[in-house]
Length: 128
Ligand code: HEM
Image (cartoon, rainbow, N blue to C red):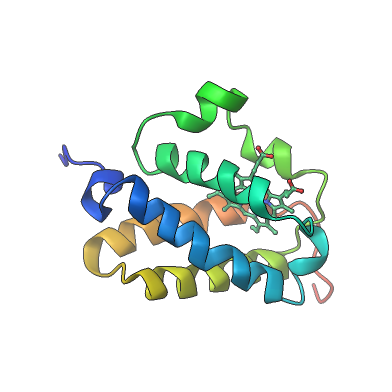
């Protein structure tokens, strides 16, 4: 049993914020991801700060503002192929590197992100 949340172990909201700040510039430079994100990425960044806070065991900030996460449903308007899920995960891995998230807590975070990214896939890929 682990009484301390991932959120607390990484340093809480300031660390979530740093991850988000490291992640979205990479998304915007990624040739597969950039076309499906809006030019003004700031509202997406704010939602992601709220979401990742609760996703990693912090206060339910996203749900308080936007209701049940229903993340797969909220992603259905966007064509997410397996290749886009891989691209998203590559950007996230680099963001976690940049923020210096390492060791056991990183493995735990990665497991949750990896599974969730897989659940967002809603389109077949080009080559399968
Ligand atoms: C929103 C793409 C995975 C969390 C979005 C948006 C896109 C997107 C295009 C909407 C931007 C807009 O508002 O116009 C993707 C792709 C993924 C992926 C390609 C690849 C698998 C994930 C994962 C998470 C996540 C794994 C969480 C761990 C969010 C959140 C929002 C969002 C919180 C804002 C939802 C809202 O509108 O309230 N994503 N996403 N996404 N994504 Fe993802």
